[in-house]
Length: 235
Image 1 (cartoon, rainbow, N blue to C red):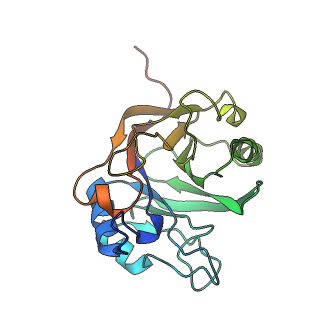
Image 2 (cartoon, rainbow, N blue to C red):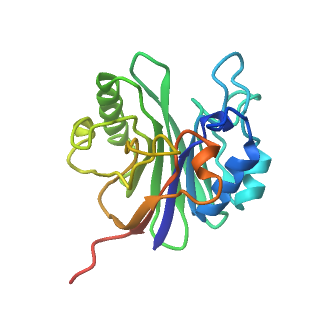
Image 3 (cartoon, one colour):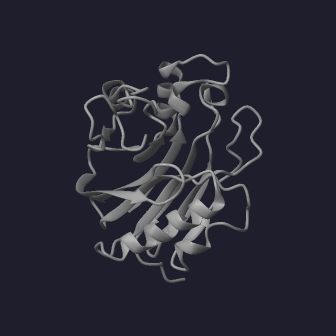
């Protein structure tokens, strides 16, 4: 089974022109043509963390369905994150994972079953400090040890500037891919947005999405990855 995974830090729908335009973010999301999209910064950070992006509009624009991430009635996501998936993927499990660090952070793990093997997607928005990020990735690895063994992709804003360091604590079972420069969106130089693939997930193609209003709608470009789910093929 082949699925397209995508990740987009929507920056609370605030574009590089300092205009808050959810319609531009929705257009970018629709253009990804993804089976699963992990979003970061879908909610404002203060008070009751009200949604910056409407769940109904997000589902309508993409044809995907959001997993029930929010715990508060004002929010769309959890720790600002949400996962949307195409209707043919049945949600069989959802886990909120609190992450250590100087800032409040969390990961959202959704388990799906479709026409092929079951798999797991974990949405992350890691901390600004490398020490925190290392602790957070180690916490993710520990949390996975208590979950069913499923092919797992960890995708999102890793906030890591180094191409060679910072993700070691995730463990040798994961291969981290940086599809391309994604920050800042207008003239991207940093590969902050990444995807880590565990056993039985195989990268077929990947890249950044810069079509339409993507270079102005947020401070990040989205990334996408076409992934095959299943054992390695012989030959």
